[in-house]
Image (cartoon, rainbow, N blue to C red; front, top):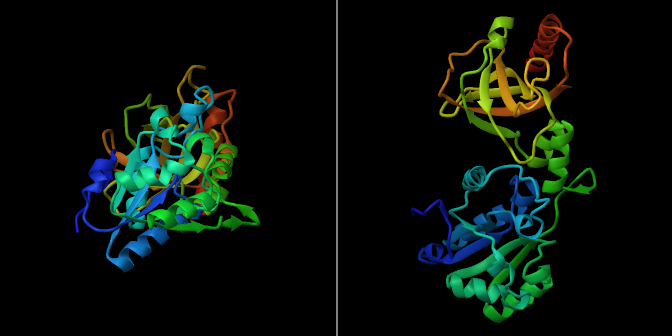
Length: 313
């Protein structure tokens, strides 16, 4: 069966043939806790010969309720959709979250979904799922509504790591502190970024450490600093080891410099301007710092590369 990978309205999803098993949530980061919900929907759909779907929201609801301080997303909607497809979801509904949708009362929420998606057979949420106007609905209300509408409701307990629930908030905190290895443990995969190489000032080449320059502006910024990474051209299968610097390059750039990602290939690379590169962030080496001289900067980069080579062994 062929399904549209992503749609932006209920009408497009309602035209798909087969009973719909729908996971609902923001799912920012698509971490291990999210997968407990999503994979159950996938399994149920395959067992019953139906369609697995995800209803997620764009923009994040916080942009409506807290426009002055919205939640900083771990990944853009395009990357999230791709991650959901990798898990096995047949179709992703990226619902525009606006005042009209937010004003649906909790007791009318599931009825609204069922009317919009007549083939809806079951829904899958986390145990702390809240919905409806003023977030008044909880799983118990969802189960009650489901019984009346003959829609099964499955709720997954929160997955914990070291006794604490895995959450997108916790992962954001780890990224912002530079604890990339901890963030990867919670995600269940290596934190990954993507960008297209652009021409830079070529200072790295002058220092003997040429870099791939990748403009990249995430909402949730990892800590500025130096990281051990693996990278590859987006359509390649083999990863290369590298040293990445993410930040504003205080030793050589203006104070208003936008943060950028630079990767130095430990074994050299044929990648060049215009190539799209994926990078997996594996280990934090040190925070970004300002050096008094170019020689001091070069000496530190030499140490960083040595550290990364030891990590690569």
